[in-house]
Figure (cartoon, rainbow, N blue to C red):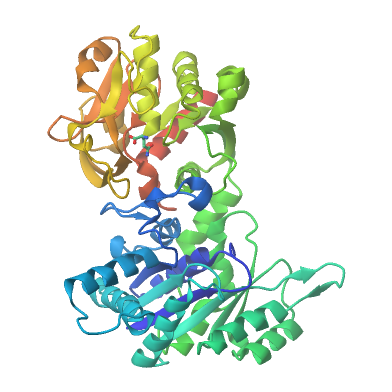
Length: 533
Ligand code: GLN
């Protein structure tokens, strides 16, 4: 078993997660079984209670774990199957250690960061290695070297490397090599200093991933190698990707990252076969056609809030040799100025998930626009709930219909909370989470799109379609196309009088991959192309 630890230096947002995932892609294609893991030094038990401004998207795993969005990169870039043990936070570590202390497991001892917290961290890394049946564990440590909260993790890694031996574990340090315009030079000092910071606590990186806007010349590479104590072939240049993040594994391969890592870890493996990956990247970079798709949300100014949705659209587009021109619309702007102004001319409308009532009326207006103008529509989670509200209000005449999340006193609670959720007062991990089965009705659009009748999709929500309104809505052309196998929960709806209108209660965006786009996104883009014609 080999271990690769990915740390970050100088500044955050250098793309550690992407670098870790890209290395995973390359190693997997060398025939190695890879598993990825993220250690987050914050004290939240999981990111499920943080809002997108704090944390970007919450990525949901099959087992219902609410995790960091880097796990989305891991799943999209590799075949590894992730569970809640692949994302560890300080909050979880402390929660476990404190529970053990209360139970009396450490009776008589003083409970300390070293060894109790560090032992817990090491245990979780080792356990993943042992249970995953993989050859390599890639562990990314959130934050930046020098952060106080990250120290226990780095100390745990120091001890871990001592235990498994330096031939079995390496550190890949992702760092910034800034270009100073006035001097016309790339500067290596910040990297030297962040490596010095690591050395201070007994860690020596073996590989440097140098994020840079300019190519590293030989002199800069020599300097980094000399001062940071890494061999020349381990100084890896990582420029900004030109068009898409999926170029990253190819660029790192060209820089020799995977060969260097395999050399240091003494792994004798063949060159990776990246043919299909390169073809996918080519289709993303230079597609034959383009199509305009609007996303109507409330976090559109944040790059990371709808990450998996953007990626899913890219995957689906590529499968049609089609680039996606995203039209990002703030739902509150629609409330002010009407849907027509923002949505006229788009080939498709997507309403993503969300919580709270801000922007909900704008999303409802976007649904109405799509329904009336017969523009392809894809609603995800809250997107299905607003589609239901819209139909109830404007087609069934149930004025003021709403979700009880937004209007607890609505006369027509077409979306409401489940009985079993009513008494839940805690917020953490208390929603309907993770993979659940959905049965699709024969002769529905969804059945045609998926090509099967039983599907498994990931959930993250509290509110549900209210079955008391089923009959009145179905009479008017609202199609309940997918339900839980028992038939009691509505999972997917369609409109009978519309060329392509699908809204689902679950999150298909968590299961799309570059070369296997999700059927709903693929079908949606195909409908958008047809709509344009
Ligand atoms: N707020 C809604 C609910 O809790 C939708 C959640 C979501 O879109 N993820 O049911």
